[in-house]
Length: 160
Image (tube, rainbow, N blue to C red; front, side):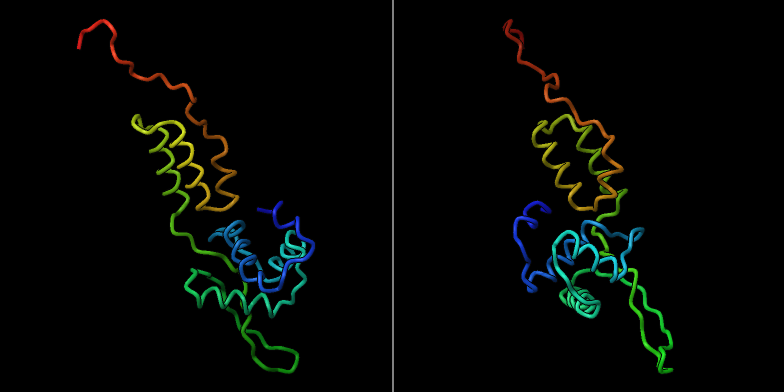
């Protein structure tokens, strides 16, 4: 995805909400949260988009309004004029599956004797895609089944 994004010289501002959603999917979970500043830095570095903090907050809130499980922390502080203002931080995308559930599903596929290797590999990649880069790094050590798994062959001697 990153390579495709970098092919273009400048991304249109209309893409900002989709890019922010992509950042939340790839980099966040309950244990890995991002501030608006960190999201802005990723937008600049990976998407060549220069945006202000307010635009990021507006797009994050719109994602939540659209039904995405975008979570954040709220805190109140007093600004320089003595007025109270709410600060939103620690943004992350709540996942449909926990890492433990994904790992359970992957293990079930790996130990299944009825799923062909190519289909198993494809399903595992799809399951890994349901989480972020941190999950993929934690399951990188899992050995996949070899392509040439011994198969039961029909007998050729006529005995059934």
